[in-house]
Image 1 (cartoon, rainbow, N blue to C red):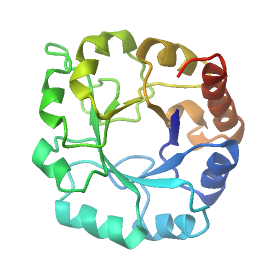
Image 2 (image 1 turned 180 degrees about the vertical axis):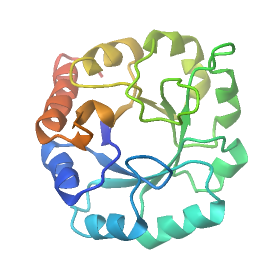
Image 3 (image 1 turned 90 degrees about the vertical axis):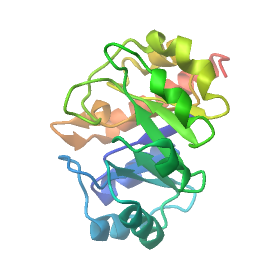
Image 4 (image 1 turned 180 degrees about the horizontal axis):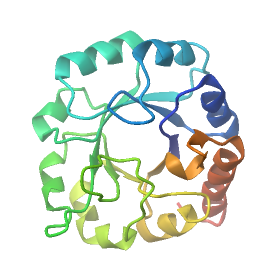
Length: 211
């Protein structure tokens, strides 16, 4: 089970993720209260263990700028939360994670067009005007009818996850990974205790014999 902690803005938070046993950390390069500069992200990345995956998060950024940031920082994966199409995502050599939110009328019907174009599909909650990181939960079971359309892509669960509900989300979706941001924050900052709690809850789910 792949665990990503997103919205990292400090070395202390990134190191806490690594020590807790997370697999990846996310750096937001789009407009957000968690936005980080390339320079600050670079300073953090230099001091992290090589086994911890570094993910860049973008919203409708130009391909050229995404590629530059990826190369400059040595990002392992690229996460897109905007209206990036299948052809856009396919240009990033199998390193693209595309975020989808349930359309109020059509659900996740557009997801089929991305099959084979992305490495993973991240399912987030829907909140008008917000591309992600809202802390809002959603009905994870509602995605089940669309799940088969993703194979062989990974499925990553997101949207309002926290230490108290991640076990239930894992039960409902049986994803390949989870992504959390605001759910491990206290007063807008990453909290070391909550990060550990979150990772431990995912481990507890795995320990109970669920793969």
